[in-house]
Image 1 (tube, rainbow, N blue to C red):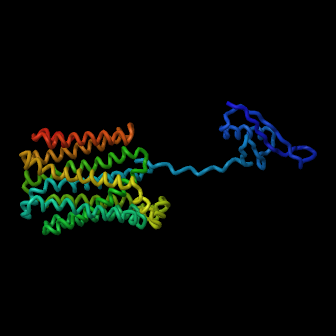
Image 2 (cartoon, rainbow, N blue to C red):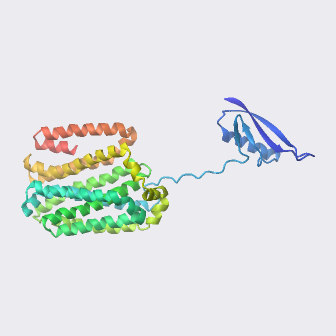
Image 3 (spheres, one colour):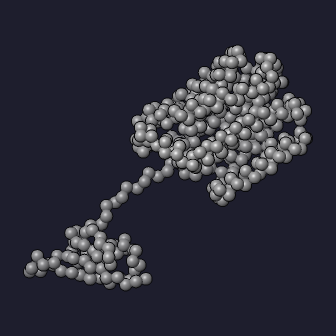
Length: 392
């Protein structure tokens, strides 16, 4: 605590109105409590009838202007999952879209044996269908910002489901294998659009780790269901492999209707007004600045490796269990489901753990656990142990 002298210049209500007088106040207060000082002076002014407008306040070496500072514009509060209310259906159909992406990625592994029999190619050739979605996904990453700027989130909500519908409709017609491989890039393009759009949109809400954990958990739920359904359709009901894509076409139509309705008012003009700095970056090129950052490339390498392992292991584990661990078709499908079930649980609950203890510590622990479980999966040649390890 320190004693400060505050001088205020006020006009004298006397016979010589032109001669200003000086009033002095001594306050015992911290030097940094300027708001409290202003409040006391304002109250004193109201009591003696004088005005502080046009006066000056000297506090040590600091000078405040005659009038209180203008009210500053408060930043826009972060949105919540239920505020505004329109976020509820938007988030719901974002969850649905991520489920479709998970179903798309995880079903391929369960369909590989049937694809080998149908097209007459070995596993190496058939595995090309894992590569082309990456091409579409990469293309989506390059043009995502431009689509947002011109068409807004509504453009993404329409374009991505259409990509899914086109890809699944073509595959359901069981085309020649080169067409099958190529058309998977279209579904990858749609997945890339929704992934970037909805992650960015939900990432600025309150509790983003929890919301995005639920969002990606829906991806894992879709991936969890896909091997079970696809394996049952082929093994139990003896349906052809492409019947699975009839189902995918139907759920993608629902995705189109729901996302379009939910994001209809999120046009390009709305997006530009909400993201003025982002709109300037599209025209001026802040992308070059991001590409010059070491953090950008470090995260790129990490996520490139992580996503490759995730999708590759999720698609390959069914065939591995069937041929190497000598499991039945149903057991192999269940092991794939276990992998995605573990991922869904982790994404759903570990987001809260990460918020509590911090990203750096938690990511280090998660990576160490994943490495140890991969070694168990590889080195212990028993189906049950491998199934448990891949789920954890």
